[in-house]
Length: 67
Image (tube, rainbow, N blue to C red; front, side, top):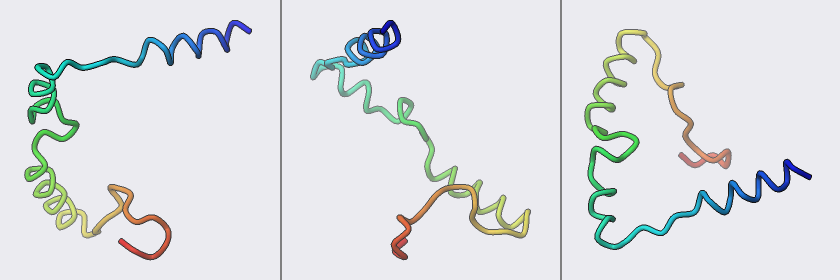
């Protein structure tokens, strides 16, 4: 019973409304999960050449044969 109450409270307090004035701050590049996607692509390419293997670092495709 306590676990269900804890999980429901966790869901209720995890929702937050963001004011429109704050959305500009949250959408800046430094707030993204990967702030430098160009550099990440370059690093992955260098790593693939150095290791002699390509891929395997991220999940792609949906299992339907389309990438």
